[in-house]
Each structure stands twice: as C-alpha cells, then as structure tokens.
Image (cartoon, rainbow, N blue to C red; front, side, top):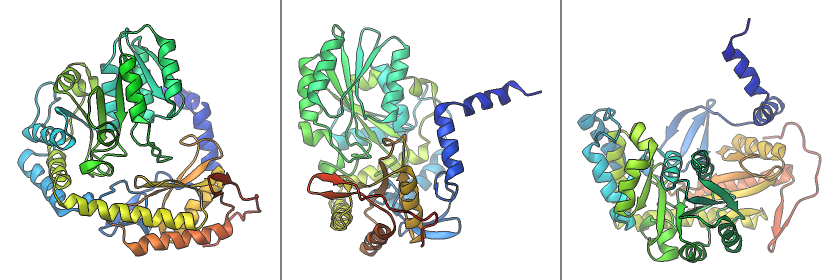
Length: 429
C-alpha cells in the first residue's frame, strides 16, 4: 500500500516540466553537467569536479573578492565576535553589523537607506508584494528574472493585477499601463542587466513613462551590482543620474562575494518594507559573519583600489569577447562579465559544455526553459582574477569545439546557423 507521500511524488513526476527534465537526464546522462559537486577550489579560479581540476568560468564572484583576505578575515572576525547566527528575526532585533552594512551600502549606492535580505530572490518575492495593495498594479518585462515573476504571483494571489510587456519595449509598456487603468499606483519591474543576453533596459524611457503614468520604476540590478556604473553602483545611476522615483535591488552574493541581496531607496520606503515584507518579518536574516564580510567588501568598492579591480575585469571581458567574435562565434553580451555563446539545440549545447570540460574549462550549458527551446547557450562568466592565459586557453578550446560541432555564427548583425552535420555520439576530447 502506497503512502500519500508516495502518490504525491508520482503525481508530480507526471507534470510537464518534471517529465521534460527526467527525459533529459535519461537521454544525456553523460552530458548533463548539472547538480555537480565541487570537491575543492584554488585561488587561481580553478576547482575540482569528479577528481578533475578545471578552470572555472562559471563563477559569479566577478571581482574575485571571495579570495580576498580582507573579506575572509572579516567573516572570521564576525564568527568570533557574534557566533554563527543572531538567533532572531529582524522584526525583533538586528545585530550591529547588519545596521552598519546597510549604512555602508546606502552610502556607496548614494541612496537614503538600504535593506538587506538573505538573497535577491527573497528581496524580489518579499519587496514586490509589500509595495502594492489590491488597488495597484505590477507590470513586468516579459524576460524579467524568475524571482520577479514569483513576486508578481504572490501579489496577484493577494488581489493585485499584474501584466507583462514586450521585452525592453517602451511603447508596449505604455500600452499595457493604459489598458490597466484606472489604478492607484503601478510598479514597473525590470532587470538592470538581462543575464542571458547582456542587454540593458532603456531605463530613461521607462522612467519617463513611469512619471507620466503614476508608476514607480523597480530595477533588479543583481547582475550590474559591483561591475557597472560609477563605483560599481550598477545601471540606474548612470542611466538616470539619480534614484528619484526608483527602487533598486542589488546582489551581495555575486561581485560582492558574500551572501544576500538588498533594496536601496528612500528611508521612508525602507521603513515601510520593514513593516510589509514577509521574508523580513517571518524569516531569518543574513548571519553576522557575512554582514562583516559585506562591510569589508563595500569598503573595497569605495576605495581607490576598485578602479584597478574594474580595469582588470573589463580587460578580461574584452579579451574574451573580442577573441570569441574573432572566431566567428555568435556572442551575446559583453557589457557585463556574463558572456553567452549561442549554440542551438539542447543536445549540441550539452555536448559543447562536456567537450570544453574535457579540455579543462568549466562553463555553464544553459538550455530550455532558461532560454527558448532550440536556442541553448554557453554561459561564460569572466572574473577579474582570471589570468590572460586562462582566457586564451578557453578561446583555443572553443576553436577546437568549432571543428566538431556546428555552431551558429554572426555575419554583420545577421545570425546564421551552420548547416547541420552528423555529430558523433561521443565527441573526441
């Protein structure tokens, strides 16, 4: 006799997305490099998987601060001084390092205040529903991050009207807002950088529409935090010149290489989120040790040293992007340290990732549903602490990949797919 738990597992296994992934696992057991175990790491941006040491081009610690002794020392100090956890929801209390870290973030960003969440996902799923009532609407870019979608779903379940507009299209945004009227207030939710394509949104156009439509611009700038704009503050300040009428979400676990996410806005808005955002009220906070690490990382971003870090990072991104384009590859992005190389079918994308791993380089093979079906990509994340020879080595491996897989190419601004060829079941290393 089966238990209800067993029957639930059976039912969930029959759902469309679960069946898709199970079929994928069955068809490509030797190619699907997901759910890997990293066994050891080295400071030179290499790590060990399955007993094999490879250069890691899948790390989003873009500035290399995860290996910075000052950040590591701050985390160790935080454990000694505060223990492993503060033992309380922030609705009751905040350890002093939390307050200091938020003050440092606000000063660095140039906003009145900041509020730290345990992750960017919790920031989006906590802040977005907290910003609206059933009299308001949320309008999101169709390609906005999954966590924005989830935040919109929570708000919708509470009676808030939600809608999507065509990607990066101001005219369609204006159309959608007009169709939703009347409303009391509207939130326009977009990414600051779209991580799969590297595209930036037309924030100035969106802000003009927001001001004319009684709407607030909400920007998830997780992939721009620390790597774009003045002092690494991201896309908003450079695009708009100020934070008027804008709420910014940033990451503390990518370029800053610690843990968490943050919302930066006015002091009044942050105080309201403390009262209305459920993850803050009912969830646990970032541990004190990582709050000390955040403070140390922000100090580095606010110092003269940051310019040198960005110079190294930007040079590495250019070196890889220019090299990949010189190979004739279809390259997307290049404005941030996430560069994608278009491959095509799910099978070819998985084969490409496995081939590069055999050459000594780990990159992420991204397939449906993260990207459209048949438009799989290799997602390469370039870091400031990658050596030039590591980048050149990956480019050489990509050149070899072209010899065994049909890869699309860019001619001018036109994407052209190489005619299909017979691909061996096992690609030679």
